[in-house]
Amino acid sequence: MIRGAGHWRNWGRNQHATPTAVDEPQSLLEVVESVETAASAGQTVKVVASGHSFSDIACTSGRMLRIGALDRVVAIDREALTATVEAGIPLWRLNEELARRGLALSNLGDIDRQTIAGATSTGTHGTGIRYGSIAAAIVGLELVTGSGEVVRCSATQEPEIFACARVGLGVLGVVTQVTLQCEPLFKLRAIEEPLPWDEFLDRWDGIVDANDHVDCYWFPHTDTCTVKTSNRTDDPIRTKRGYKKWKSEIYYGNFRHGLNAALGRRRPEKIPELARNLVTQFHRTERVDLSYHVFCTTRLVRFVEMEYAIPRSEMARGLRSIRELIEREALRVDFPVEIRGIGPDDIPLSMGSGRETCYLAVHLSAGTPYEQYFHGVEAIMNELGGRPHWGKMHFQTAASLAPRYPEWERFQAVRRQLDPEGRFASAFAYRVLGTP
Image (cartoon, rainbow, N blue to C red):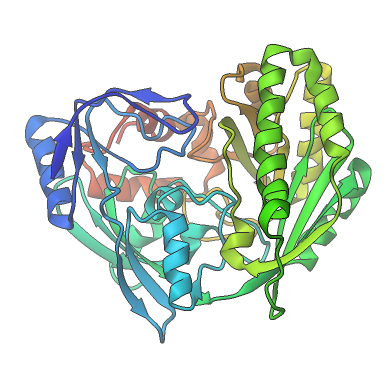
């Protein structure tokens, strides 16, 4: 086991922590040792992976566990189409390992830098009204509790723990292995095109119903939205290559956007003009590729994000209200608003638990003051029964969140069972979940 200490900060550069100690366990036994050591010293334990959360969910002044070394594919069940992997494997590597074995996850988000445990523990999702979040694909879990006990759970083994631990926020234990339901490797045909604001609002519901996966953006200070639809296909792979691929996937979404963001931070009054110039470059594109290449995109420009899950039926009201907020308060917003729809799941603290969901995500480039914008958006989301993404910025407390989750007490009961001494407590946990 590698031990150390030092300063930590997240990918978005908006969260910082100075843990008392940092452990980098190389095995399940070393995870148990770390938890037991922390218990003996009266320390809390916080697992940190890629640091891709924008909330303070990973921050700690106690003992920090970096699980990047736990990154193996443990077992593949070809009959059941399941894969058991260690918790620290990053999604980009997991996708490649599955593809080599002819498998794929049914749904993914648009960023693949997170670990599988980090993504599922915070409720990270993808798109598609006929599909659930990444955590909904979990069929088995292994975790180390606050006492150092190793618990393995599934729908038939410790089912109550399993139900809650799929989105466990890091407070139920250290997840060390995950078993995922997969499907045979598949391709997607992705079509991306711009739509005018009014047409987008009128057609969004129909587009969501008609396609496997739908990812949309509205660009503030313009009347332009983009719609990316992705559907399963047996057609041969057809993608741009070389310079054309770099220009479409890297230049516009990263270098051009990054230059605009940097200019906008120096001269905020230029942001609307930059946005209007950018959307004139949009046109219809089409490609066919392996699913994970279509789902995931390269993100080089650092940003800070808030995302809320609201009932699907409230999408238009929520998006219109965000636009009204920006115009009313003369905000200068240098990132698009992302709009996605996803199906319900049965996980107690999943943002999509029990309802068809629209996710509205707002962003600002790193280093831009976000408080006015994010507080304004959160006030809108509160009126719509919004549930914040656990890994993204929000200002909620346990008192405001508990009424939004019908199975809140079910999760709290499992929390008391697995961590009665608060070994996995943190300022974040106390604020959003209350005292165990």
